[in-house]
Image (cartoon, rainbow, N blue to C red; front, side, top):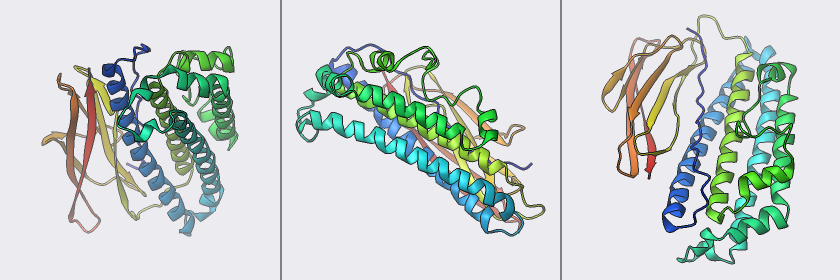
Length: 311
């Protein structure tokens, strides 16, 4: 089987409730931490895809096709980096409006709706974020006609209930940031960053898959791991996907999740589902396995998945 696998994190969807109690602010903070871990992990895997593209560009057998698609992937990286940097600047602006509260032990600033209101309504950052997300999506689609066809149903930058064709910038600001405490706004920004990194992952993987694979030679492997969420409520289902991203052919891969063996499906992916504990807190699942290299020797692999349970 010939495949390149990449993983995408489905986002944690939190309640639209704007209760600013300590309990809800704590839940926002836990969820935001989960998103940050997710974003870091997706970014790591995106870099693995870029590395594979660069390897294809250096190989005589694939450099012709790679010379077409690697620059397109670089364009996607440039656009995505710029979008992420803007989102992170909005987080910093929220913190700056707290007048130093971010560095103080008193975290009352996190509950203040006035901070979000000033940044996203009075300063117009909500409308600016909305327009930048639209421009980002359009630019990604215009990287190549094949990308436009592949993702014709949408990139998933906004929630399914928000149609940019029928909603304005003011609708966007009202839906996402009206009466939102500062910590809730930071969490929402992490969610949008997660969306951007997932778009980058999907479209760069698509570029990579347009390059022909080498016949008869396996140059290297990359162990990829994905989970549906890094922050869940008690009793929800956590799903983990795992597989090998290979330069050419998928090796004989065996995987264990917390010691339980899981077989690969027809796409070369092991899917592990587990009901999360009822008690709030941070948990981890160890994923171990091995694959057989071309010399016939087993190669061990391991990673740890972290997730949080909130009330």
